[in-house]
Length: 577
Image (cartoon, rainbow, N blue to C red; front, side, top):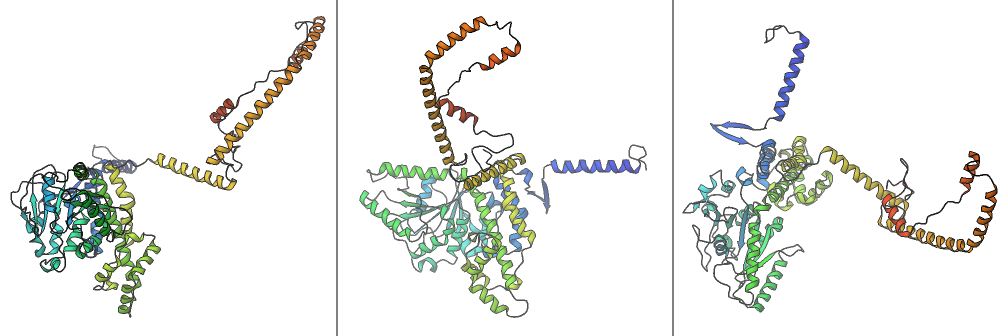
């Protein structure tokens, strides 16, 4: 047929050109940036892909939007654990959550960090803060109400709308221009009251909202008033609900300058004793003890110590943006692992249900033994038990569901979770400079080195301690043997020199008689070549003795004697060293 250039193409040439064009298009598609735009109602939405990741946050946005969000939505993950993540939450600044009883100085602490008042501030000795307030970077002169704050896609608070209008009426955003808000977001909470006052005037779930903020915070500050060190049952229950975020918690003993040194010692010991009943970990939490306000410190004896405590806390807060990338990756991996465990739980419950009759009894049995079922799933799937959620929380949530109609996670969905954990996240961090992925040659070299170490260790175990050159005891044995050999060689050399001195006179007489006899014989020039070679071979050759230091040094330089393909002489079992 006729080509585009006006020449006739046969079938073979056409197939070659088609294959060449397809290969060129494939190369262009692989080398081109993987960016595309989706148009929705005339608005172009940016879609993140592995080739255009500029930061770890954008990489997490791309991985979550492309692979994880749809899986969580299909498996009802947001109904059992936490809400779905938005792009603004993954791209948000580090967040600091402040918790404590009423009048413990939370709002004063925020004003001390910001350096000035902010919109909506109210400080007093009575419980003044009756809602949640987020201090962010901005220039709004008045607080932004909760309904307007949760409706914006640029702010990371859209998921708070699920807690209802009663909470949104008690939530606001205060904007302030300062150095702190350019890097951090501070969350002020109402004081935790004692008894029925905690729930009587609040028409929202305080513990659930605190848990939502704690999941997205980079640091949680627990503030205590040095004059009120008792921990109420309500504060204890809130702290216990945040046991999954123990690594984020820091303790602040506020208003400590008004006490004497002896009183501070008793207060600090009592606070640690009370908290020892709440935190079930052997590690001691990082604590700061000072007074965080603009007024000068009253305790002159501990003024230097409290000033240093202030500086330590400020340095830890300003260091949060530097480690935000690692913390975001850590929280993302924890969420993906929890999603995988959630899928395995649903598949197991569906599998244990009968097909025809007895579904109600099977459901009661599974709910009663849910902790044991979690352990069984962990053993069968080789997934750590710590990845699974709290079974008692799941008992309450699963009571209203029909187990036979729970969504089923396919093999492709489970493999997606595995790929995100094992491969996709590594590539994303490598693309953004998190770490360098080793090349294929480097990876094979590391595998060979690991195999060599395992083989040497097996050699040492089989031959016994001290027989292989790779073990520490073997090296000491070789050094001791070398030193003993050198000492014996030096002794033999000294004995040889003594015997040579004794025979010096006899050898001199023998040499003189040989000289007189050789003068009567023929000269070397007149002798035959065979006679010359035999006389040369009969001459005694001088022997050179080596000291112990030179002997051991040469052995260290040369190492164990090995043949080109045979095993080393220091290890009878075939060790390569």
